[in-house]
Image 1 (cartoon, rainbow, N blue to C red):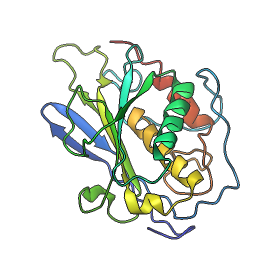
Image 2: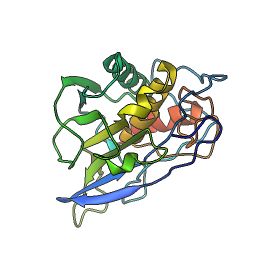
Image 3: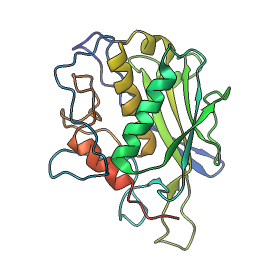
Image 4: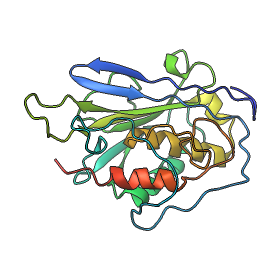
Length: 237
């Protein structure tokens, strides 16, 4: 893990076809001691779009009209494997789910704990939040404290206007690197990676939490919040 101010940018997107599912990981890195000169705006009480800020989506619909996201008319269940997690991790996950919900309207539900480990992505299973090691999850090697992404089925053949939805995902954190962070930095990592899970990609705007370098922003910016709000407006299945 790099030192503050000297963190290497790690932007790796791995797309793997698994039994007809597409799975995308967007690894990320944050320093051990994240400074906090700017906390960013609070998420609104209802989804809101802003005129300023920057956002990008991990995937867009095959038709080119809007992003790929979770079905906003169905709950998104999330399970947590606390093996290797620091004390208070479950409460932080709850906070992250609450922030994403307020910004997007998505019905993210904490479905308890599990002993499932990161691995093959299977449709129909809850989103998994887990802690692991670079040995078990090679994408965590180097200056990567967490990775997150989601899976979606292929577009139905012959239906160019069909809306594609994510159906499950994973958020995996490096247990040692995450443990070395302070609470504010840990929360920022969880928020950032869950942003990837629901469909956000990195941006070049330093005022956003989805910027790919640790630089003191620890809350979602206006662009992040706009992107999340739009992900909550994906047409229902």
